[in-house]
Length: 162
Image 1 (cartoon, rainbow, N blue to C red):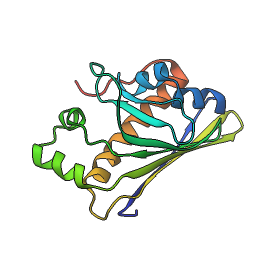
Image 2 (cartoon, helix red, strand yellow):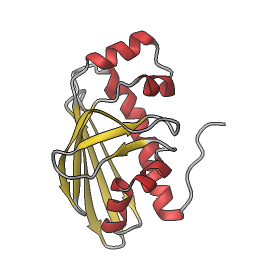
Image 3 (cartoon, helix red, strand yellow):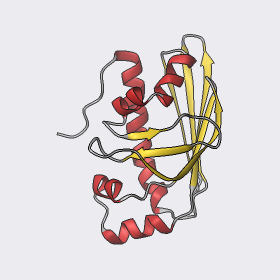
């Protein structure tokens, strides 16, 4: 495993078009992000705004769409260092400050049709060695992507925690 990137592949019983909608339509995104997540018009160069909880409006943190090729590829820059995400993950003020010093990374989603399923290949890279943000997303992405898969296949969300 690289110390500067995260890769993940999951296979979802869906179509590339349905998966694309789930990755780009706000109402779908908030389902598997548990009420929060990104928002954009998903055009190359457009801002990607984030709400970090169901109670906050999406904010522009300087992230932009790098690639949008419906329904095959989506990529954008990433730098979640807002106080709300620190609260979500229980970060101390020192940990939040460490995350703020990290470089902006990139996340890409490649959708590969394979019969009645779609392989969703996620690459999140551009991290510095020993990145605290990378450690966080290695835990966060699998939960989010598992929830995405479950929503698309069953219409239900997963219930994490107690």
